[in-house]
Image 1 (cartoon, rainbow, N blue to C red):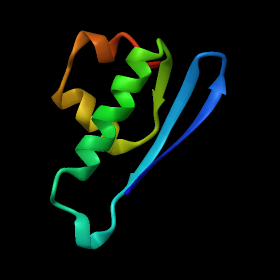
Image 2: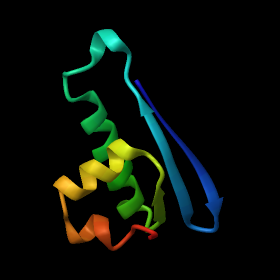
Image 3: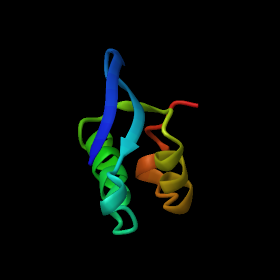
Length: 73
């Protein structure tokens, strides 16, 4: 499983997509990737653009201020 991202500027990152192999789906792996990505954004004090639909959904379902404060609309 992978999380694709790119740095787009100083202290800015675009979280592009998650990919989980078909045989590994349904085990919460994408959720672990999304949480790890958002925790990294918070720990490194970055701003994140959420291009990945899954990470957008993860943040909506886990509306923690520590995540929301780091999202670029």
